[in-house]
Length: 194
Image 1 (cartoon, rainbow, N blue to C red):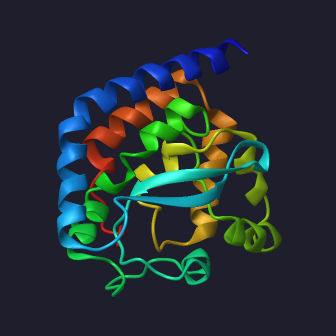
Image 2 (image 1 turned 135 degrees about the horizontal axis):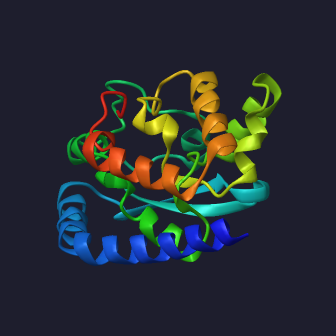
């Protein structure tokens, strides 16, 4: 229980500080999105979090506005024509994820934890991958053990789950600090982020 409270305090201080530090960059990104493509600056998408509760996750919009049904069931692939030129840069550098700091402040996400998935894929993977639903025993994260080890985007879901389960079984405040530090040094730019 103490670790949970410390983790939540770390989330609030960390996300709040990051929003202040990155605010000028976030405003610049918002302006670039608005000037280069039609549609909203912020993309909202339903995800599944702690205890399988659904929540709305925020990202900077990196794609052309599309049919919501199509968007719910398709992953982004390499060379995906839906991604805007600015979106390609934001995705490569993980800058599209910055609005999720608001999700952390709201308590839907943590700074560190398994990445949340869309309801369609949760239903699909829960039937196909043993232990998949264990990731919903903890709050989803902005970054995680799978992500800093290269398992994000179009990578094997079973490997992501393997790393997520390792994190859940071994999580401590110090493990979270290690993941945050590794994210700063090697987790932002990723060859699998399309």
